[in-house]
Length: 163
Image (cartoon, rainbow, N blue to C red; front, side):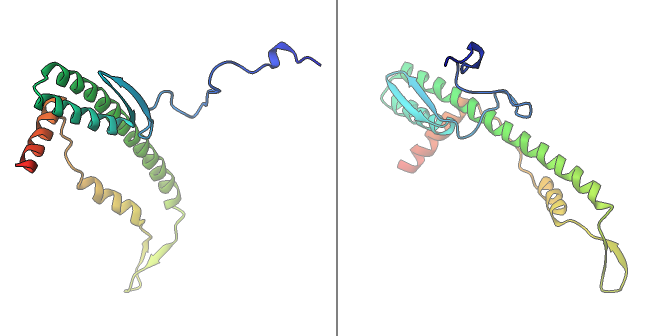
């Protein structure tokens, strides 16, 4: 018996739209296959960035400026992909934390009071909320490095380690 034509499977990779998921949100663990100049590499964006920086350093040490610049551009590309994934993860974490704080605020009115040693009644505090406030106060400053500066820093570290 033949199936009706509209019952056939759709073409593509089986991705169906999910109303809750954000489209094209990068993932830190996404594996890439890179066809760079003279080399084919595999790994996630951070690994590929490190591999191309190492290749650029080796090419620069061998006196091949053009090849070193090509590897640096590939490293920059994968550095940007990695940063986009990190930023997306932090945004998801912040949204999750805000939603959790909102739920906690709704539940805070229904929490029972706790008596201290003197017998005074106080509302119960959430240790997670206090920890989040302390963590945000101690957050580190973010420094934006260009690929050239990053490459110089890596080269200086390697030179100082070998010297």
